[in-house]
Image 1: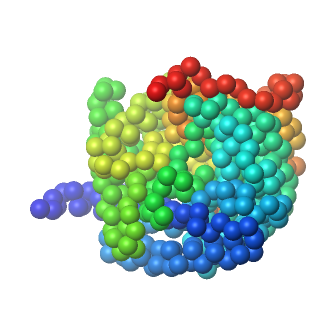
Image 2 (image 1 turned 30 degrees about the vertical axis):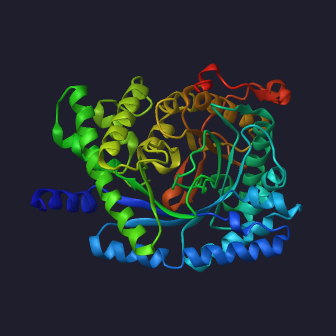
Length: 452
C-alpha cells in the first residue's frame, strides 16, 4: 500500500532539495581478458566492456523517466588494470587507458574507473609500469580515472609507494596545467580501499566481486539540511534521530533504482552506497548541514564532533534501509565540490589541518583540495602518509585527492566546472618532511590488525 504522504515527500525531495541518484556504476571483471600480448588484451577489454555495458545508459534513462528520479552519472568500474599489465611485460601500459577511454565514449558513460594498482604491501609485476604511466594516461584521456591503494590496517603502509605517489600526483597536475590541472583531480590515493565503491575517481572492480555487478551511489545532503531546518530546536539526540530517519528514506530510493537497474540489465545487484556527496549547487552541501546543526561556519570548533554525529546517523539509517549497504557510505567532504566548504575555505575558517581532523570521523579523506603549485613532491607524499595513517590506525577508508595548482598561489582560484566545482588554493605547511619520506620502506601494521 503506497502512502500518499511518502510519495509527495519524495517528490519534494527531488524537486526542491536536490535528492538524486549520484551514480549507477557497473562493475566489470577483466580477469578473463588477461593476455601476454597487450594489443590482444586491449581488444578483449574493449569487447568485454562494450558487451556488458551496452544497455547501461539506456536502462538508466528509462528508470529516470519511469520514476522521475535524476541519475546524474552513469559509470563503469573495472578490475585494477595493473593486474592485466603484469601479464604483458611491457612498459606501454598506457594502451589500456586509451582502450578504456574508447570504451567509455562508445558506451556514453561519464567516467570509467580502474586504471589502478593495489600496492599496500609491495609492488607486483606490472604495478610500477602502471603507476609511472598514470600522469600520461590521465592527460590523454577525458573519462579515465585512476587510484592507487598504498596501505591497509592489515598490511601497514607501503612508504615506497607513498614516496612515488607524491611525484605522480604532481606530474599529473603538470601535464594538465593547461586544463586547470584536471589530471590530479582524477587520481585518488587510498588506504583500505573498498572493492565495491561506485564513486569516482576511486572506483575499481575488486577481485572478490561478481563478473558483472550494479552498484548505486545515492546523495542527499540538501534533503538532510532541509529536514533539520524544518524541525527547529531539538537536542542532539533528536538531531541524530532525524538524520537517521532521513537517511533511511534516501537509501530506499537508491535500493529501488539499484534493483530495477540490475533486473533490467540481467546482472546482480551489489550495494547501495549512501554517501552524502555534495555538489557546488547552493543547498546541496554537507557543510551547510553542519551549520544547520549549530555552527557559525564549517571549520569552527565543534565541526569534527558534528560531522561524527552526522556520519554515524547516516550509516545507521542506511543499514536499516538496505541489506546491502557498502562502498564508502557516510558524509563526503570534498572542498571544491561543496558550496559551504568553498565559502569556509575562502574565509579561512576551514584549513587543511582541520580537514585532516574531520577525516578521522567521516567517509574518505582529504578530497578535492587545491594546494599551491610549487608544493614539493615530498610534501604531497607526507600529506598522503598522514591521511593513510588515520585510515590504517582507525580501520577505515581514507584517501587523498589533492590538486597542485600549477602556477597559482594561496588564495587564487582553480575552476574545474561541473560536479568538480572550484575553490581557492589552500595553505600547506611546507616544513620539510624530505628525510622522513626518503627513508621509504614500510610502516608496520598496527597491533589492532591482529584480530584473527
